[in-house]
Image (cartoon, rainbow, N blue to C red; front, top):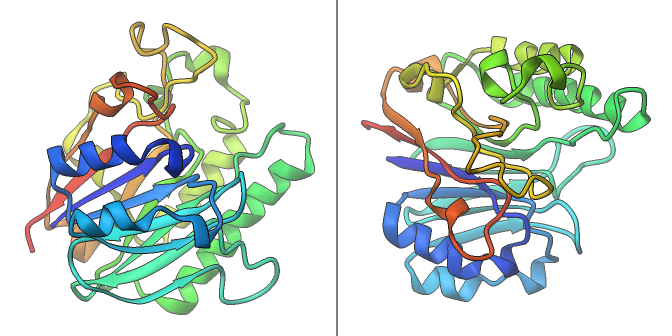
Length: 257
């Protein structure tokens, strides 16, 4: 099974790019974030024609999550199952081939001294409770998405200067680590240990891609029973080099199931 995650930064602007990626990489499942569209306007038809079922939950202009699968999906639902807000445009899950997949778009946090950053930290805690209520690390589970955290120094282009940014902040890293410690393995780092491997290149830096000034904030995590089946993982830069690219690029993991 090949699984990909990609913050597309507006699905209606990236339909052709997503279709090209699907044709090129042939993932069984593509999880997308920041689709930025209400459900009735999600462009499902071209993906269905390409052989993919669609599950999505969005809102106008912001957030939004979706799962495309060429394998049957069941138990598709969105949002937290306890407490408010449900954040249904930031979390969607589905079962594909008896494997639950949780796709998340974690809040960015804006500024470290803001209520938005506190909300981000609380969001990770809510996610940890969500996993604890609904799953067990002793069974197969995949968690993917734009987690808006670069875990280590090697995951950003300039760790000294960027230290303290909301996506490279010790508190955010600790919040992510608490969820990972529940029972997840970083599939990318199982196979790739080099520095300078990034999934996000800021639009505001016109030469970011050429000079490799990026961030690794998009992740594919698996519980240990599934991680041991992960045979490969890589970042695909091709979509970031194309026309009208998202500022993120896909991350792909393969599992021998």
